[in-house]
Length: 186
Image (cartoon, rainbow, N blue to C red):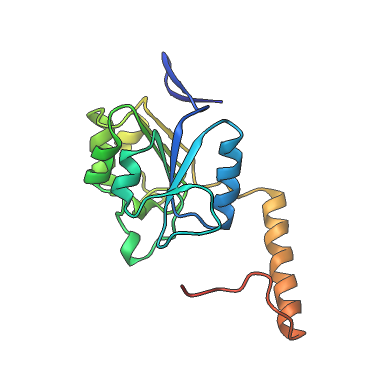
């Protein structure tokens, strides 16, 4: 698998150090798939996860300093807004990539555009944007950006699975059984 940055440049994913910001159940599945490419996985989260075999970094800055690809998968809340800022992007460096599949506001988009334009980071894969549907026009002209219109989960199967989960949770709730996907406040 290759990440295409521009027509004459590509980077092999296999063997790369992949840092993941946020490591919840769905993201754990992504990490397992990345392992099959020989990627070395590390993560940052609100707390360490003892059952997870990956290296933990207590700050996003430390994680960015020690990976080739930084994937943002955390929830958007007050403490994660702009968690990926100029300092983190600088730590990532000129030959590394950011991928955001979380929420647009987890990245300081103004700083991201500047870092991409100045080639302070190699590239970005963006499924989300800070002010959707308004995307910075500069991103469209950049050859080191791959973007999608926040549609990664819009498949027939994903909608059916979500519907089934809601129905099964309602059935469990009204039958006084444990919920399949309870909301847990950490």
